[in-house]
Length: 145
Image (cartoon, rainbow, N blue to C red; front, top):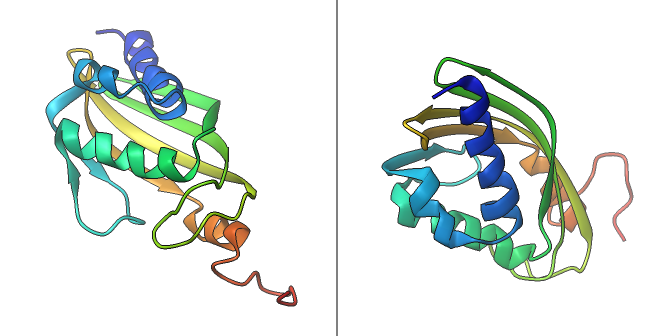
């Protein structure tokens, strides 16, 4: 597959699966032995069921999630995407009750795509900033309310 086709697969994940909640597409665009490397999540997320649970966890907390792709670069079987995600915290997230706050998170992910399917993802996003926006972690220099 071409670099542009690989980029399109990753965009479908962010737009249609993560942003749109269409979990039926997971089996189409992820390899059965998929692995996600996310330092903010304990343990390994693997397989199509693992990514469905991962997306469901975040969409359960932020049901109006949407992504803006800021940059996307592809070479060979790797796609690098710099994105901004936004959503309203309307459900529990990792034990944090809903706050109804609009949360904005920036991140970068590197996906390895083969045969039109995402096989592996390395993602880093501003998890600290997300937790500060939720009020779960104090923001330095701000008085607690």
